Amino acid sequence: MKRVKIVRTIQGSPNGVNVITYRAGGIYEFTNEELANTFISIGAAEEAVEEAVEEKDAGGAPSNKAVGAPPADSTRRRRT
View 1 (cartoon, rainbow, N blue to C red):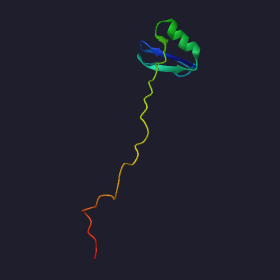
View 2: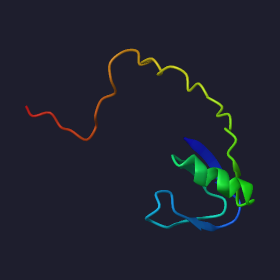
View 3: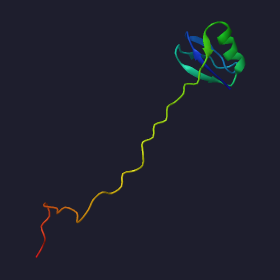
View 4: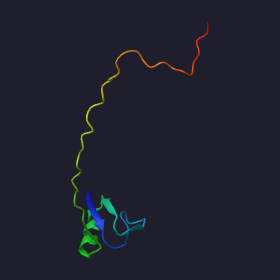
């Protein structure tokens, strides 16, 4: 499989039957590497560069810091 970035909109057939419009700026994965190589050779595409994804640590879940009894719910009335 080959990933390419299309630099100008072009049509092509990945399977010899269906024609697909490949849009400029799109990144496509080609199972038909011959079509991808053709697009690259005519200047319609370039090999896609894997961009590094920075992983951010969200940290652990906060611990329960509540101390003592829960606050009284003033909206409820006790029945007596």
